[in-house]
Length: 158
Image (cartoon, rainbow, N blue to C red; front, side):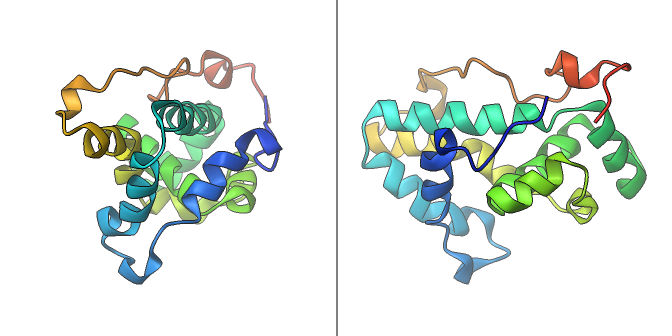
């Protein structure tokens, strides 16, 4: 099932991601620092909403068809590598995401942006001075590879 990443439901996520500082391209944590700082200045509901939207967007890219693309480009199968490459679609905005979901961004499979996964937790830690282990939120959808059962169904077609 495809989603419309340009749907206003995702506006908060994409507008927050526009805060990335690309002057630090190649240093992923620094690119994301303004995003983390912004979220830490918001209430918990904003941090958790960002987490939920990020997880949902990653979940919808967790499909057998895209995993096979990843394997064909990378030359191997890695659940973590596939997840980190899916993050590339989110870091590059809704237009890129939409093409990725349709299987039209094959260049993303040799790239990774794992640091994105830790943004909500880091924002919460910055806000409260707690450890990451204390982060109190679990999104309703898992972004882990293989979580999207419909997307991994062999009968599923795009």
